[in-house]
Image (cartoon, rainbow over all chains, first blue to last red; front, top):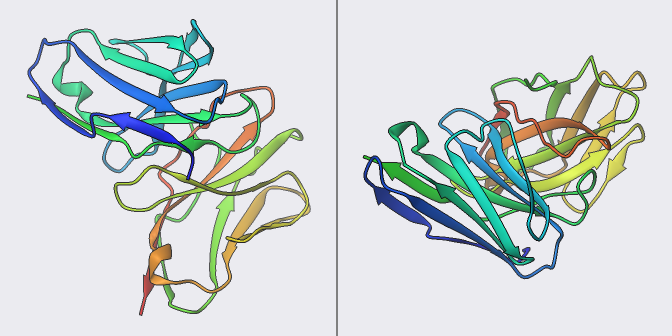
Amino acid sequence: DAGITQSPRHKVTETGTPVTLRCHQTENHRYMYWYRQDPGHGLRLIHYSYGVKDTDKGEVSDGYSVSRSKTEDFLLTLESATSSQTSVYFCAITRLDRSTEAFFGQGTRLTVV
Amino acid sequence: DAKTTQPPSMDCAEGRAANLPCNHSTISGNEYVYWYRQIHSQGPQYIIHGLKNNETNEMASLIITEDRKSSTLILPHATLRDTAVYYCIVKGDSNYQLIWGAGTKLIIKP
């Protein structure tokens, strides 16, 4: 299995509070991604990173920000959590941006109450 | 929106071959077909991908029709651990994003 660790694995937070999810990789892969998955749906891309301090938006980026200060860590922040952000969040890594397989973390289940 | 169409669910007997179809009639010449699966509550797992030739690895085989408008993922000897949601995804080299549909829920029965 690819060395990807997501933390925390589960979190319950209150509406309006900031939340940060962490993705840590030991593979030295350049590209990292944050997805969310809602019941009965496939994954949707939130943000991605193509290098240290290089990030860009995905299709559902509103309400989220990211940072990547080191190759191995990619942080996802919900600036002011809302109930619509209750979801399972997955981090993924790839060696290249445009081909080959993606490796996924085990997910973070976030509940906003 | 996803560029693929898959049946929502399928059953297969344990030990038999599981054949999962996928339609991608609008696929472009430089787009690959990727297959991932997601076992309950876990992160998705890469299975296989191909462009136009059939591909095989230790997990599965991928059969792509000559016109590339459809493909079939074959799990040769399904086990109970293959019960999962299987996603067929079309992606070109010019983009970074995997566009996920709802996938096929495959249930392997003893």
